Structure formats: structure tokens, C-alpha cells
Length: 107
Image 1 (cartoon, one colour):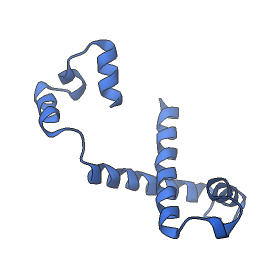
Image 2: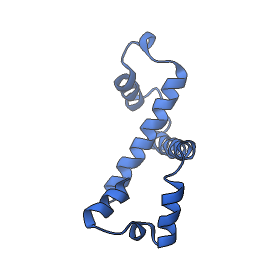
Image 3: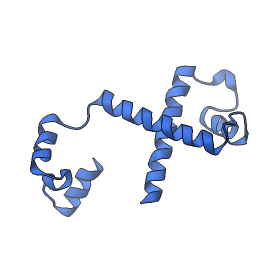
Image 4: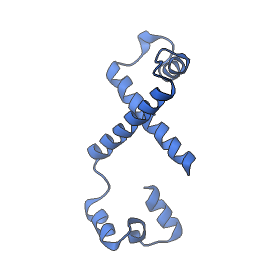
């Protein structure tokens, strides 16, 4: 979507952002990445970035950073936290967000 918006702002043909007119036609007929594939890639990116955060914090999951992160995300009262499945999904989303922020910082 970001690329389409940039192309619209620059009044470019759709083929310009895809590298070739053939790639643009493929996009038009096939559409964007399917939901499950995109979700899987985003989850992998999230897992990778969580691994990088783990390395940066030396996997001290009960340390100050992770304690603060969990309290910020889910609250101080553990009895009110969502189920483990939802927490895992939220952690992967957080990891994907961290990756997006790193990408923005790189330019």
C-alpha cells in the first residue's frame, strides 16, 4: 500500500513501482499477498525481532525491561492478563512492530 500511495503522489504508472509492466499485470490479476502468507511472514519477522531483543537483553526475561514491557502491555495484575495464546500473538505483533521501527530508523 505504501508503494501504491507513493506512486499516486508522484503520478507514476503502476508498472514503475513493480519494476516491470509484467509484474504490474501480475499484481493486478493476483492482488496483494494473500492473508495467511502475509501473516506468516509478519510472524516470522516478529519472532526474529523478538530473538534480537532477547539477545540484546541477554534473555533476562524477568529483568527490568521485560517486566516493564509485560506490565505496559497487559497490566500489573496477572489475573487480568489475556490467555497465553493471545499474549503470544501480541508478542509477535510487538516484534513485527519493532522490526518496522528499526526499518524506519535505517531510512
